[in-house]
Image (cartoon, rainbow, N blue to C red; front, top):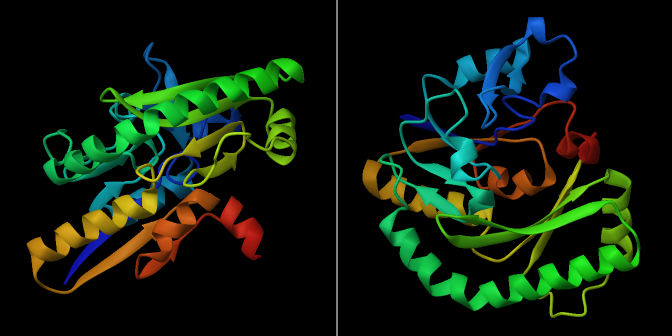
Length: 241
């Protein structure tokens, strides 16, 4: 029986330097573009990574593919990046079947993403919020609208801002200092279901799936797996415990 682990990365298998004051106890897990450490793994996170090593590990991350490439773990199979908008094969090419989906759906959403970006910029300026907005692109595809800045300002905008634009179809996710508005093709759950279907056709035998993650945006893809693993200090744990 084969076991496959779909796993989030940040705040699951490693975390940012600001959360690691005693970095001498931790191992470097990812690098910044300038070569400096971009993330560390605690001893407990290192142990979890070691536990997953015998299995096929597939990252399911909000990171863009260039940021995913700076993670020091080796992923030899499929990879899910940009909140599910990009699915790579073992050769780091967008999977052909997923590429067809992107080519069909992304042009329908690009103008809506651009319009939402402009609306958010106007709202931020009008309310003097310490926030930045941009459309995140990966492999030249518009993946989602990203808002970053002060967490209290993010919470205020999410609570008070009601988009004038039709918001149907967008999924909104907030976590720490990030807020993302994602179109239907940027879905970790959809990406995992897509890959499960491919893997099942390849294996033609019983496969056990593990879902590993920490945030509310991970819960849906984790629920599509047979078992779930989550850190005790996480968004999901806070909502459950």
